[in-house]
Each structure stands twice: as C-alpha cells, then as structure tokens.
Image (cartoon, one colour):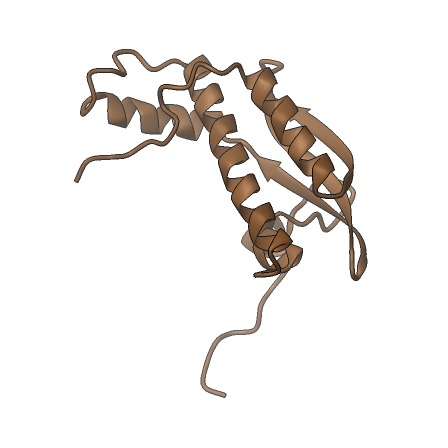
Length: 150
C-alpha cells in the first residue's frame, strides 16, 4: 500500500501557516494564543485559551516535525517528486496538516455537530506546566476506570 502524505509539496513558509492558524483560532473565539518553540527556535506547537460553557479552557496542539520528516523519508521511496526530504519541508508539511485538522474541527464545532471538548479533549491543558489530558493519561497521572460489562 502506498503511503500518502497530505501537503508534502507545500512551499508555504511555516511562519505564514502559523499566522493563518492563529487567525483561525481568533476567528473562532480564542482570546489568547501562544507558540512553543523547539531547540532550533522553530515553532513546535501552539497553545490557546477559549471560553467554553464550563469556563475558560486552555489547549495545546503539538507539532511533531521529526515524525513528519520520518514519514516523508518513507514516502520518498514511492514518489520521485520528493527526492530529498528536509526538516524544513517537514515543518511546512506539519504545520499545514495542523491547519487542515484544526479548520475541520472548528467547522464541526461551528455547525453544532460536536462540542469543543469532544474533539479537543486530548489537547486540553490540565496544569500550568503545559500537561495535556492525553499526556496525563499516558504518564499515569490520570487514570480511567477499567473497561468491562456494565
């Protein structure tokens, strides 16, 4: 089966996409937006807060450029248009992917199909250190009851 990587040919700079993501969040009610940077001073995630029915909530969307680079390297073997994937290209692809995903989720919310927490719960911040619900669950800080018959 061929590996499909959406946006792999994008030439749109990361900073442009980041600006578009921030604008999209603001248009959908975010009142605070913050970027996180990696060791190379490249944007590696975006955090935002937004008013919900339960009060203000914070969320963090990580952008794993290294995972996208690995995927592009796998894709290279099957697509001659991608002759030498770079971390820079992976960054452009990763941020366009985040933008596509976020816009789709916000459209679902705007149309009343789901609530913000239904699609964003794993990314909801649970403390002041940037820990998300997903990270807390994965590390054992947050435990769910065992499944079983009810």
